[in-house]
Length: 166
Image 1: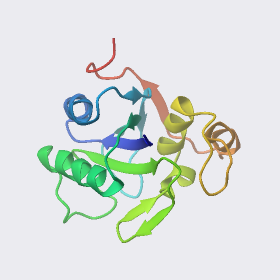
Image 2: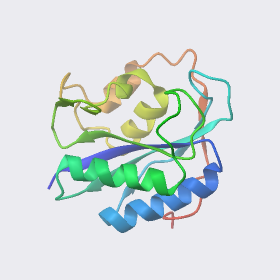
Image 3: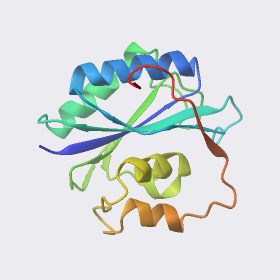
């Protein structure tokens, strides 16, 4: 059964949306692996800071079914698709990895290039899957994070909104 990883982000009603999204993801996929929550400045636009975290899950569903579920959860949280790439979001769920698949099929890009580009994706991924290797470069996420340029890092850990944390 492949393990998938979802980058979760929100900067509109972020505490409420993170909790609700975690509950919806748990309902769909069962037990989740949840990183710490990181607060980071908006990238590409001026706006409220984001909460970002990484979610690991196991699923027997095919990748397109998983992607469809994520779009449905986003829509249930007020996400619209007619907004600019860099803009405020109630909820952003990006499937960034799915097993060792490498896919480039329209909107479905696995692994997502955001993994190596953005600290808000890479740091929480390295936290919950440090020994996992990137399917293209074959470098562990811990090593990728260690080598990441942190000179302009604009994120820090915050208390995770209460949902699955025990």
